[in-house]
Each structure stands twice: as structure tokens, then as C-alpha cells.
Length: 186
Length: 337
Length: 101
Image 1 (cartoon, chains in turn red, green, orange):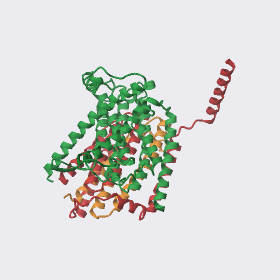
Image 2 (cartoon, chains in turn orange, brown, purple; image 1 turned 120 degrees about the vertical axis):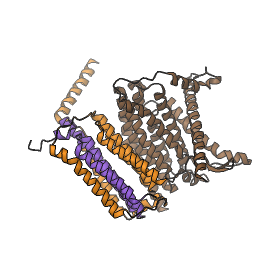
Image 3 (cartoon, rainbow over the protein chains, first blue to last red; image 1 turned 45 degrees about the horizontal axis):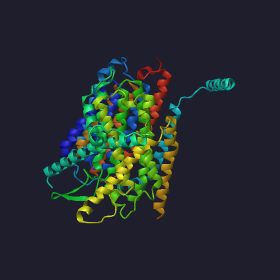
């Protein structure tokens, strides 16, 4: 039962990831990633990590990816026409990457092939995670929150449209004139 | 319990819940038309059946028979996916809502709930946060500027108010010490309803919930005066009905959560013979939920729509700081106790 | 019973697909999405180890990764908006002003 679920959702995750690479339009890539995240959330549930599974959906799928979809919509991003790149890279890239994957997986099997997870072990309760977060990892937690604040400020500064001072002054002047004219007419 | 019995029981429960939910949506909608009609000195639908009681059936037939139009230049896949996503996500959150205590029905001991998971409240928040996709994809894929504007508004509104919604729920979560909705109700025995210590949280939740479900006075995504019908302008027939269904199911979910978290769920005075004691909890629950649903309709008949910038600045500059302050004060009080 | 190595293999595959996307795609948004895919692959390994070793720390780390990813997404998307506003393109290959071409 566990294995079947693992295989179904593992396959779904891999299919989503491949679809992400194949799709030409960024919005389909983003939605493929949402699928991957959903599948991974189920894997987390299988691993007994209830809290993380739902936080994955809330934060990753529900906030971060929505932001991506939003930006794609606002920028009206379409398909990017691929430019020709280095030939050698095109020939060597895929084989080397496959090699990397095989190496990684064989390493994993060599080191952890013998270990089996004790599946069906109780769910990780939300309480212990909180305890750990606010005792053992209190400093990292605080530092991350500062990082997050800086990130938010940075995003606002970067994305805010800065109007040139002269333009602002000119618009204001025009606005005042219009107001004066309206008053005069009245 | 064997696996087969478990699956069978779950299936039966799912069908029962689905049936009740769809009927409820149909009649809430009728009630809304009736009540808003009375508020505007009209009578509302009366022609189909006695007192217009068969109106929902007529509406359903109309939705099924209408022509299903797909605009030119629409992204077909997403255009079809969006309403399905909206309705599936809306129905998903109902699974964790308990409507009463444990019952003994036909020799089966079961909870009046599809499934009781430890993080039920998180599931509801997760589903709410995914609900944005339905709105955003619908608007983008229909290839229409009104839809796009509606979905941009809807998306940013839902993301913004989700924050206050989550923060408002943190107070009760801290008081109850659990994320399970059943545990939350159990913690409110003997009239220890969380609305009393969390009155600020309650009103923040209520406001954010109205915005999350895109209802007046926060119905900017479908402002019919300026955007046609917002993100579902281009949808017709059953696809439109799906959005409609999703909106009303979301209203029910949000009302149920408000009842469970702030108003003590099915808790209330028990008296009378055995059969009365058995159905009273569920009755209390239904009365409380109906109150919230009536509030939705009442507000719709009363308040005008916000302007978009007012909506955003209200969300970010008033609700979020207030909710944060509420969380801080609550945790301080709990720590000092 | 699912062996730990299965989860790690899945995590490795997802990570490699993320690397592939990062290297091959020419669309700045998809490149960014691929980074998120890599982070997701790593998260799976964290949770799997956390489960195998019966420790909560793995779950906590995933939580941190998510927060950092959120901050990264906010800043990264802001940069993308700024780039599109100034250069009017999403193709990474066209953003080569600092190169010697």
C-alpha cells in the first residue's frame, strides 16, 4: 500500500518535473511545478510529516508559485524563442547530466541501500516541531525572519516603479493648473 | 474495522456529505434571492413550485441546457481546468469539517465528519491558499481584458486577506493548543467560546473571510458594474455553474470554520429525551452556521462595494497589523497565566 | 515498507531535472522555476532522513528552506520585473551586456 502510493506520486512528481522542462510557455512550467509540489506533499504525508506536507501546500504551492503565476500574467510573458548556443555544450550537456544523475543515485544506493525506513511509524506531531523551532533553532529562526524582512523590502524597492522627479513635478503642475481652470470656470 | 468496511463507510459518508452540500448550496442561493428581494421591497422568485421552492432545480436545468462557449484565443486546457480546480478545491476543504460529536448509526460507531486529521485547520488554510489558482487561471486563460483585470484583482486580494485570515486563527489555535477542528471544539466546552477572549480575532476573521470568498463588500474580482463579471466573464453554462458552486461552498466552509473555531461548534445546553440529546448538537451547529450565512446575505443587501486601493490598504495597513497585535497580546496573556 | 534509498533516488532525480532546467532553458522565469524544483528535491531528502533517523530537525530544516525560498522568490521576481521593464526581454541569452560580445 505504502509502496504503491509512493510509486504513483513519485511518478507524478517526475512526470511533472519533465513536463516543466518540455513546456515552452512559462505558465505551464509553473503549473507543472505546482503538480510536483502536490505530489511531494503526499510523499511527505507518507513519511509522517503532516505539518510539513501542509506547509508545503500553503507556502510553496499557495504563495510562492502564485507569485510566479502572477508575475507571468502581469508581464504577459510568452514563449521565448531559443537562441542557438554552443554546439559542444549541446552535445555534452545531456550525457554529463545523466552521468551526474546516475552517480548520485548509485551513491545513494551504495550508502543507504541497506537502510529501510520504518514505515507506519507515528506521524511527527506539530508540537515537537514547534518545540524544536523555538528552543533548539531559535537563533536561526530569528535570523531567517530578518532575512525574510530584508527580502520583502528588497522586493518592494526593486519592483516599485520609480517616477522621475521632473515628471512628477510636471504632472503636479498640470494638475494644479487644471484645478485652477476648473475653479475659474465655476 | 477491515479495510473494505472502512472504504465503504468513507464512500457512503462522502456521498451523503456531497448530497447535503449541493442541496444546501441550491437553497442558500434561493434564500439569498428571497432575502435580498425582501430587503429591496421585492418578493424574489415565486413562480416555480410553491413559494419558488423548485427554483434551484429550474436553475440547474438552465445551466445544463445552455450553450457552452469557449472564446477564440483562449488557452483551452487552462480554460477548462480553472473551474474544475475551483470546485474540487472548494469541496476538498469540507472533508475535515465536523458537524457533531460521535454517533452510533446502524451499529456503526463513527464521527460526524469525513476524516479527523490532526492538522485539519492547516488543510483548510492550504485549500484556501490553492483557491487562488482557480480565479487567476480563469481570468488569464479566457484571453479577455475584463477577465484578466478581475483575476489580477482577485488574486492579489485573496493573497492579501489570506494573511489576516491565518493570523486571526492563530489566537484560538494557541488557546486550544491543537490544530484539529474536533479538538478545538472540545476545548470550548462549558461556554468557553473563543469569541469572548478573541473578539478582535473574530472580527478580523470575519472580514478576511468575506474577502476570501469574494463577496460584497469585497467583490472587486467580479465587480459587475465595472468588469462585466470579472474573472468568469467569458464562462457560460456548466463551467460558470462550477464557479458559482465553488463560491457558495466556500461560503459554507468559511461559516463552518467560524462556528467551530469561535462559536464552540456543536456545543450548547443539552436537555430533553435521548433522541433530542442526540440531535441537539448538530442542530446547534446548523443554527450557528446559518447565522453566518444569513450575515453574508444581510451584508450583501446593505453595504456598497469598496474601491480597490481602499481594499488593499485596509487589508495591509489595518487588518494585518491588528491581527499581529492580537497574536502578540494573546501569547503574552497565555505566557503570563 | 519503502526503503530510504527510494526516497533519496526520487530526490536525486528531481534535483537533476532541476539542474537540467536551469542549464537548458532560455527563459528567465523557467530558469528560476527550475531552482525551486532543485530546492524541492533537497527538501524530500531532508524529510526522508528526518523520518529514518527519528529526528524532528529534518522537518525544521525544510521549514527554513521554505522561508528562504519565499524570500528568494520575492527578490528574484522583483529582479525579473525590473529586467523586463528595462530591457523588455525574458531571454537570458539577450542579457549579455556585461559580457565581451
